[in-house]
Amino acid sequence: MRFVAEIGALKGVLRQTMLAGRDLNRQENSAEHSWHLAMMAVVLGEHAPAGTDLVKVTAMVLLHDLVEIDAGDLFLYADAAAHAQQEAAERAAAERIFAILPADQETELRGLWDEFMQRQSAEAKFARALDRLQPMLENLNAGGGTWQRHGITADRVLAMVTLIEDGSASLGALARDVVAAAVDAGMLAPPPT
Amino acid sequence: MRFVAEIGALKGVLRQTMLAGRDLNRQENSAEHSWHLAMMAVVLGEHAPAGTDLVKVTAMVLLHDLVEIDAGDLFLYADAAAHAQQEAAERAAAERIFAILPADQETELRGLWDEFMQRQSAEAKFARALDRLQPMLENLNAGGGTWQRHGITADRVLAMVTLIEDGSASLGALARDVVAAAVDAGMLAPPPT
Image (cartoon, rainbow over all chains, first blue to last red; front, side, top):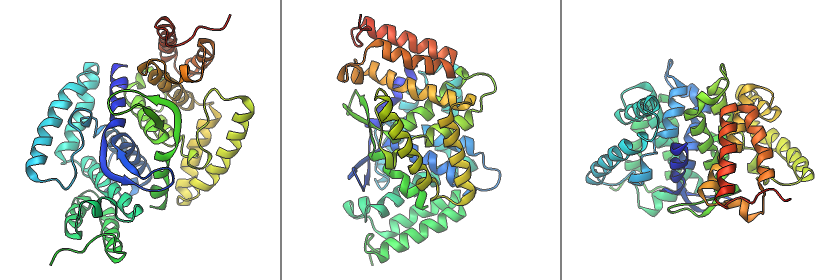
């Protein structure tokens, strides 16, 4: 119960992603982002490689950002030094937050988070593909969103697409189409020449 | 993909529940509420009756509020006429929203939502127990929250506790403790005499 109360704080962790549409036009928080990924795991499961455990993927995306309660969210396109610092902060957060659970559940959920971070299993790779695809769809929906606000060019988004392909060939192809459509529509700047 | 984009609108549906704590102090939205329930399904599964399919419970709580994209959220303690009107609006919303999916997924997800609404299966009863328990925990966390804002007294909260007991004896007992603690702390008014 203390864990259930504690994790509510994820609703206060803001991401760079801008939400657009009726009653929105604000930054997304990590709790609703995690909900969106879990729904994607439910409806896009057929895009995972055969044999992928979608129950595990769903649990993984639900909890993947809990460490941000302490560590905050880092912008995907931040530099390597910032990412290294973030990873250390997230590991410290994982130590604290999962330890609130009874020991057997701490082991289970911490194990899922470690697996997500290691990105070796089919489940972790597919979970990461969803985590990379969802903000691209939000940016498309917002007419450019974070790409425009931070001056992100298509080459940097395509580097993320390779991570999506690593988890799902068909979602990778779809992401590549999203990038092309966003460039054509003037929502995303082409690579600098 | 159109379904994935469409459901993002649930992040704009505000509930009566007030969130408290660092960076919060605002109304909760239905997407982050649904995430919280799914996390509760993951960590509180042992409180479900033996044989309950927790994978189904998780999917059910993730999608249970999608109809609010069209129908909006109705306050739990609204009157019977308002609840009847809401139910009709939610059924119309279900017709539209689940039909965005390919036919096989429409049948599957609509079936889960219908099952949740009928509240006959162990899965639906446990999902509803989580849905009733979570706002009580938020109100406790907020020092009274919606109970105080709307002048809800303990007898009305205890009527909800019977619905929690219907899904899980142990979570029902816990909810009863929450009510007693909230009354003792002056966060929740005792029944009118």
